[in-house]
Image (cartoon, rainbow, N blue to C red; front, side, top):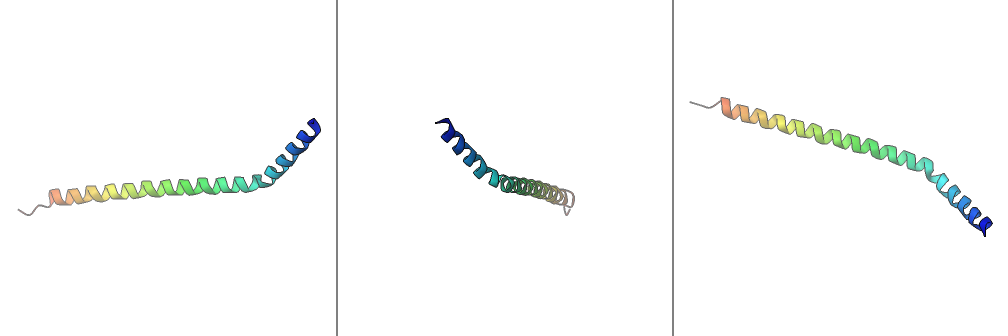
Length: 65
């Protein structure tokens, strides 16, 4: 019984071992994608905040009297 169980475990380890390099590439690509997306969102937020401040300042300090 132990010999059969060990044999199946070796087959499973070999099967998943073939996919290990692919998983590393996928995870690294995902990490890069997430980092890029977060950077883009933060940049867009800062640009939006800057536009809002500039718009407020323009309205506040350039009143026609």
